[in-house]
Amino acid sequence: MESKRTVLIVEDEQEIADLVKFHLQHEGIEVTMTRSGRKALDLARQSKPDLVILDLMLPDLDGIEVCRRLREHDDTKEIPIVILTARGTEADIVAGIEMGADDYVTKPFSPRVLMARIQNAMRKRVNQGGESQQEGVLIRCNGKLIIDRERHVVSCHGKVVALTITEFEMLFMLAKRPGFVRTRDQIIATVHGPLTVLSQRTIDVHITAIRRKIEDFGEAIETVRGVGYRFTDGALVESD
Image (cartoon, rainbow, N blue to C red; front, top):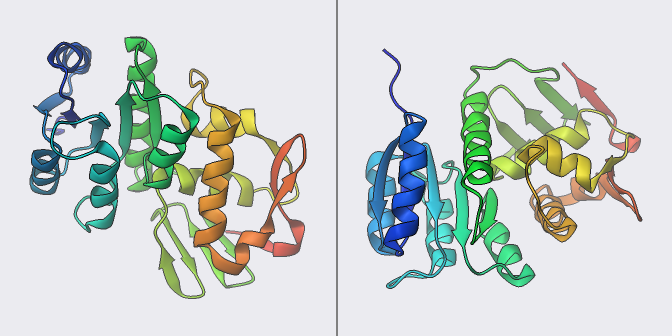
């Protein structure tokens, strides 16, 4: 029997937490809730939920710090994180993404849009376990950068690179078709889903993080001014 999917809601506004819980349970998802950032860290490490919905304004530990600690701990670093908060400035969104959040939803929010984001993030986590076969499973760039779609692992010069799920999807999307330009809107639609509304600045922040993490191969991701990004043909990408 297939086990139920599980979500940890970290939210100090009870009405919001109950609303999100209602919609999740309607989809057959088991829910655990807490209003404490510190308690959330313990719960995530103990139960390893399929996803964390995280508010930023918590009474004891800022949500950005919770996100950072989840990403640093081996037991929780792969768990998708969707930030749900009233702090919707560009600086807040950038901070959340830089700490490793996979998506960002601002209050007030549409439950339908939130559920679409959650389902998309959880679907990507299932795919990374090899349950879904996709084209271009393995991409090698000069033998030094390897993007393994089936194992959801990226290695650079023999070292594993710690990418978030969103960063991995963006890198894979660009690298599997070198030389082809992807607009920011195409990247958002492919990685986050067609219902997602994100600022193009958010994509730029993700790209900056990817470039930094893949070291010298970061130069292979070219900015096409006024259009978007492409993985340069000069990277000599081979797909298995």
